[in-house]
Amino acid sequence: MFVLTTDKSGRILVEHVAPRSGSSENLVALPNVENNCSQTQLENWMKKHSITQVSQAKTFSLLTSTDLPSTDYMSCSVDNAGSPKFPYEWVSVEILWRKNIDNSIAVAMNQVIGQVEKTTPGSLEKLEQSLVKNFDLNKVNTRVFFAKSETVEVTESLISFLGAFSVGNGQQTARLCMHHSQSQVIQEMLMIHAVPISTGPLRQNNDSSVSYHMMRGALEITLHHGGTVGDVVHHVERRADQPSSPSSIRVPARVFRTIRTITDSAVFIEVQSGPFSDSDTEWRAIEDIR
Image (cartoon, rainbow, N blue to C red; front, side, top):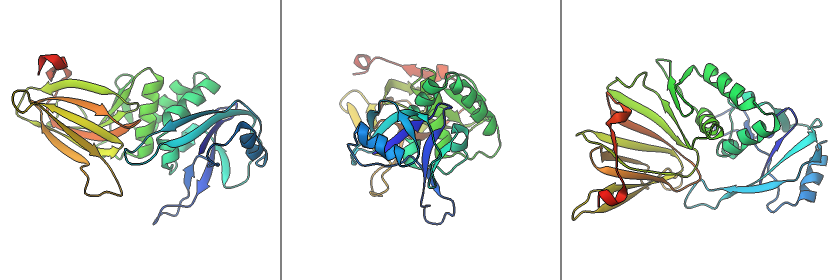
């Protein structure tokens, strides 16, 4: 069970853990305690690290893979942050997107940002402005961002933050466009389903295609062919331990499709031909295409 703890200034308690193979830098993770840890056990654990005055802890779980159990978390805040010794450290959120964070933080970024905003109201807007500047992005609206640079490097950290900021702004998804404008021939977008959603049926009524390449989580993509073919369901998911499972799919743009997130979040690259306008996408009710 991972512990998400914030202090009065909005800092996060993290643990430095052994680096991945080939890396010399420690990973930054959330501290890990025993599963089913009680409030008393949590407070005793905190006291060992000079941290006291712990708020009522809340628990939540996140499903990141369809063939693995959910990951359990416990969240709380503290009034007395103390001075924990290495490998534990209090860090500001701006530090996290410059660090080599692990999945315990990345997949729980919605909750991290939500808890920081609750602790220090107004921090979400300031953090988002700082991240947009740091990664040289252009914010179009609360869920759409464009990369300005000619060469674009995207980290799991950046993806997680964009999704969390969108959720904090009342959205469910975020999109990072790695092309510079919708007039370009190749439209390459990082799509972030920050919460489980279902979108569609939709299509682009042309002879091009749309491809999806999973980076995190799982999608169910249903192609609504109609007629005698009917609906065809495809499951795409990036599974490190199952290299033979489908993690990418290319579908005809003219066929209506419904995209459903079947994990608590999903991140994927969507590629289609341009120029593109939002008005090119045709939406229908499911009963109208069967």
